[in-house]
Image 1 (cartoon, rainbow over the protein chains, first blue to last red):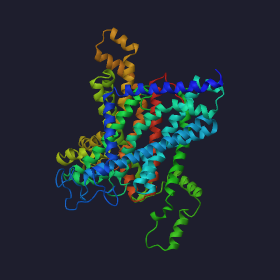
Image 2: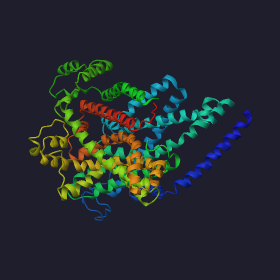
Image 3: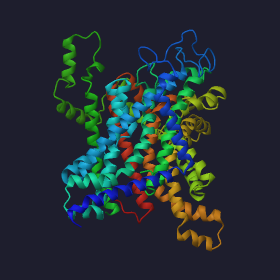
Length: 303
Length: 337
């Protein structure tokens, strides 16, 4: 093979990859549970997108429920509140709808930043190797020694209670897994024949990394990122339930917390509906992530 | 790498990782500035506050402060817990045993339910029971522990009054010694069925809530190793001997499938530790989680630092212990770094 032929070979490798992806998608959609997951995710995305059309945004801050002081603690269906109101007269349906925007913001920000940081750190470690690799991986070990929620809890506690700080705290914690995954994948792939072939042809390290190594190590990252879209919201909700988000925020965990005392007084609706939203969100991403994992890498089970 | 060498390497690395954790924890808590507020009172003069700062080395550079703090740590001085109004080391023991008792009980529930469901799912792969078992376990992983706990409180605490909040009834446990700090074990050692029943009654609801969340990962691992085990030759051999299918599954396949499942028990212990924060809050369980949440809300740094350190230590030791158990159970295993 001469150097001139190489781009064409690459292109066909690329189209093989696309064909493979279509196959994977068809296989993924054969699992009914995964389809259910996709449907729920789609519904949440529509809800977040059309939130201003579904409910009139509250002024000046749409992420605080509008207060209907004439109807506090009103049960679902009464006084024009489909899902009822909380002890401050906040509309529960409004909170659930606008909460979906906060969940989307939280999960997308955290997952995207941590995937990028993880890929950078993991690739650097694996491509450079040696001392840098050793140092970075020991840092990763230290991070992995503290359970995610507990680490994020400490960071958010130090930064002070706000939703933005919850996002920061989760982003500071979640990159570690990705760094580890990508490093392991790259080291595995570096030994593969096609990378050796590219090296023989005289490709630069950067080109090998970009065209061969990275696309082939995407799979476990996609699975983990899907699962984390749910996990991040679950942990974020726990942090705001504990009291690390601002008061009155239309965040689902904070809403469960606000409905807590009402729950024990028989006013079940605030906590129940807000919590149900968290469950559905996390369930949807877990179902899809689980389905993807089954098809993409049936060998790595829960690690 | 040989298993023994790998475990020894892990054991040597452990104190270094703990040192790393301590650096992170220390830097983190000093991020917000001087913790002098914990020691100072509103009617102190600036001179008195300065004297306080000098006394606790807070006027020194951060590395000096860290060295002093680490020195204290190694001497067993973890600082003053504002929320407990006592030295951290004096109160932390009870918190650790309370959380451990809850986590162990929840872990046992998760393992028993997880192994049972995973076995069913693996044997009846891609059929109704498989889907049902997986959906149930994924539902467990998707349900916020704090919400599930609240939902269970309404019927079982509010309406039926079956399970009380807290850890024990004071009058019943008044005459019971605490050699282990685990109330159920203490009650058995004291030979008091009344105390045992009281401890179990307090423990069961939070343990179920926590265990439900930790179960998913065990179901998943058990299912896949069960699928693998069912296609092994020894299963065919057992069937060829004419053994009934139940015996083949229980005695042969399940027993072997359980060995790789032990590896995720360490991971699920991390889940139990982090899940205990919200569960303890809801069920008024006086453990590490409840302790740290009140510390967070009142800005009690020494307690937060001690909490993160001790949880990391427990998590690492449990994971190492699980690896050792796994290496013992499966002699063929070769671990890599």
